[in-house]
Length: 446
Ligand code: HEM
Image 1 (cartoon, rainbow, N blue to C red):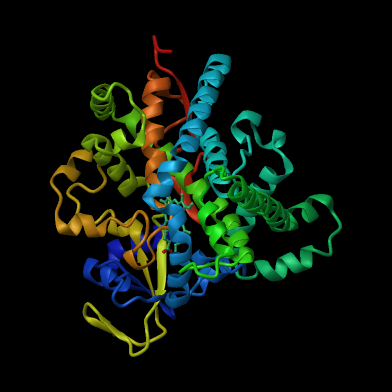
Image 2: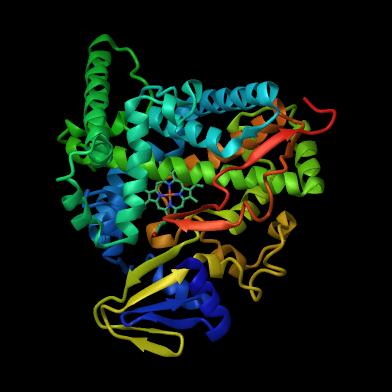
């Protein structure tokens, strides 16, 4: 859908009717109005379907419900909490590059997409539940534990439910088929939930024990939030049942997105060697320090990551919203209440009136920005429902790129990794058609 809507915009302009009730909008002032915080539009029912009927923030359609939940979850993603979580992120990224090195030594090839998927799931798993899933250490799908396999199964089911409204009925019909594989698939979400309940119970017990012994519980996104669940005076509270659902959702949205973005960033850096060398020089200037505080201050690193997000964010999908009561004027058209409007961020990011030579990877463009460029950057969604994990994702990406230069400085794209294999396909998020991204050691390298 993302690519066909993009083609339709190129052919027919910024307003295109894509179904009897849905209009695609690509003109920047209207896109910004649709995602404005001052006049928030609700999400469409599609999000409820994508959340599989589980009541999580990302699937909340009504803006007022979303605001309450966002406030309750916000403390987990605050900068002060993220600082406490940095050592966990550092540890998993280091383990990931050790794995990549070991694969290169053993076979000469490493599929970084697969390594990053395991690593980002380890990161978000430990940040949500306080335990190390150990996916990077344990390896490929067939060697994974039951929980990790269920997680991937669940991601598949979520995608299918979002794309096919008939999926719910199909699942009901499938539940009568006694085949073990079918039953295993259908049980994925339940297994993740059971595991989540156990982990959060353990973490909550630990918080209580630490209070008694004046020790410190494991840092996690939920440590403070869990503590608030029992505190009647806390300003924003969320009950434990809802927290378990949110944790399950974060395992999915917070892992695949970062893994894909990291993969495309590495790929583009190895396609553009001059840019890669400039970034290497900047990192040499801070003596290869991979602490996030240092990395945040690097201008070239910031520009590279921003440009990689503009062209390769996996979240460049159609963000669908509903015109509020009273209808709204968008550009030359008046839309009645209830009309669905979809903003294709893939198209906005490639608008040549906003971004000069939009298809080129040019980090330097971010040294001379316009107001339009900044507001058209929607890699993490529109302002009114901006990604909850934006700061965590950026921290992971910065540390990952710096660690790559430090631990694997001499990589090259493998022959299998071509422009064609890295073309996007859209399965809930954008990912490479080739389903992998292989690297090798550069001639004379590590
Ligand atoms: C590079 C990595 C990431 C990208 C590109 C990304 C992108 C996005 C986008 C485009 C949206 C808006 C969707 C919409 O409005 O339809 C979104 C929302 C969201 N993201 Fe992310 N995301 C990333 C990482 C993360 C991480 C690490 C987490 C959490 C741990 C996370 C949690 C969420 C949540 C909970 C929402 C829903 C917000 C809401 O309902 O208002 N994301 N993300």
